[in-house]
Image 1 (cartoon, one colour):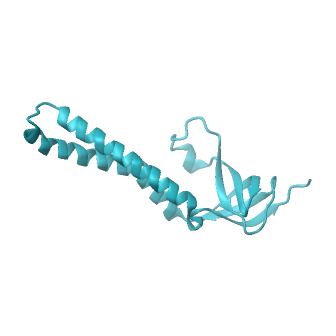
Image 2 (image 1 turned 135 degrees about the vertical axis):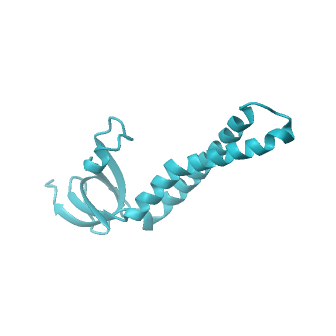
Image 3 (image 1 turned 90 degrees about the vertical axis):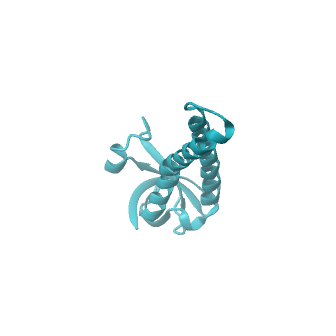
Length: 141
């Protein structure tokens, strides 16, 4: 389990939106471009409120699984599509690179649909979400 700190932005039905500052691991990635803050949705069993500074934890395996699905799966699908295009070219009486490109494009689009389905299922699964484990500093209201 990896732990992070953040500030609760809002709470609804046992869930909290928590803003975390980018850290060293995020800074070297560059995938977020100019984003200076990241907001995550976390399970809120400690009943933190907006403005509270909290400690939350998440499974690193979930981050790795998500990264694989988003970054690697489309590459694999594209490569498989290109290979299928190569073998389908003689059957379609096609030449040049068009069968490779079309195969890769079709399978890349299929990968995007798989990613969307994965995202929807992951968004509903409470076990995959970070969990707030401690309120570090209560917001005075």
